Length: 394
Image (tube, rainbow, N blue to C red; front, side, top):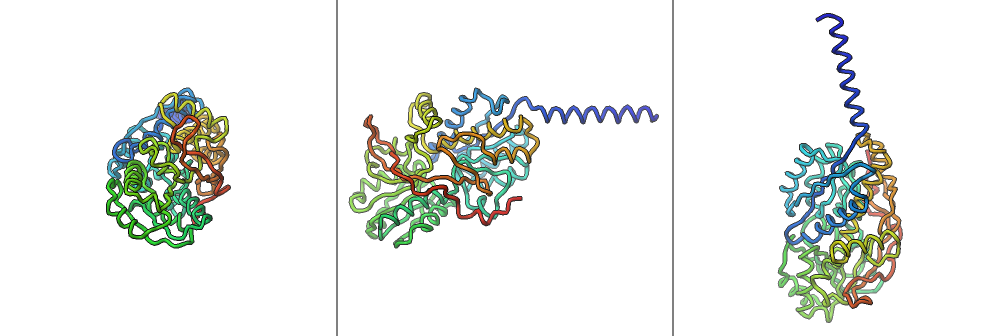
C-alpha cells in the first residue's frame, strides 16, 4: 500500500471518529427503561409509579432536558428472573440511557450489578435496600424515595413517644420486610412481644391473627405492601382485633391505593410518610389535581415518587445540555437535584439517598366525605438513613 493510501485511510478513520464523537455529544433523543411490578398482588404499587412517571413526562411535553424521550415499560411480574431478562434487553438491545420503576428490593438487588456495570444510571422510585445505601453504594444508583428503614423508623419513634408497651411486628420475609423490622426497632425501645414474618405475596392471615390475639398487644405495626396489606387490614378488623390493639403502618401499607380497596375499616389508623397529597406547595397541588384528572383517583406516595424520578432525569439532562455520555458530569447533575419536588425540599446524601422530613398521617374523612390521609405533624426533620457511614462512594 502506498503512503498516500495510508494517509487517506488514517484521515478517513479520524473523520469517522470525529463524527461518532460529535453524534455522542449532540444527542437528539433518549430512552428510559421503566421496569415495575404491574401484575400480581403488588401491581397497584407499580401502576402508580408508572402513572406518576408518565404524568411528569406529559407535563414535560414528552421531553427530558429538551430531548424527545421514549419510555419503554415492562412488567417484572414480581419475579427476579423476569426482571433480569428485561434488564438484559434494556441494556443490550434498547440501549437505554436511564432505568427506573422497580418496586421490590429483592428485585433491585438481583438486577443492580449488570445495570451498574454498564454505567447506566438507575433512578429508584421506590426500592431502597440497605445494601445500596451502605457498603454496596454506587455512583450509578440514585433513590428519590427513601431508604427502606426510614418510614418504619418514623413509626417506631411515634409509637415510642406515645408510650405503647407491648407491640407485635408483622412483615414479609424478604429484604424490604427485614429492613422494616430493623428500622422500627431502631427508634422503638419498648417490648416487642413477637416479630412475625409472612410469605411475600401472602393473602390469608388467619394463623398470624390468631397468634396476635394470643399475645394481646396494645399496638400492632405491620408492613405488607399492595394486596398483602389490603387483606391483612380487612381480616384484622373483621377479627375484632382493632378493638384492643392500635394499628400502625408505614405509608406503603396505608396509602390511597390501600384505602381505596379497604375503605372505612382503616379509619383512625396511623402511618408515616415523606409525602402527602395535602402538602401545601405549588408543585404538589398541580401534581395531585392533574393525577386525579387523568387517572380518576388520588395519587399515592408511589405515584409521587414516580413523578419525582422523571423530574430528576429532566433536570440532570438539562444541566449537562444533553451530553449523556459524560457520565461524571451527569452524575454531578443528578447529585445537584435542580428540580422542585412535590414533597417540598430534600437533598441527596453522599450515598445518593434522600435527607428529608418524615410525617405522621392519620386516616379519616375529608371535607368531601372521602376516607383518606390527613397530615398530623412532623416526626423527623432532615432525617438521614443509618447506613451512609458505610458508603465509600467511588
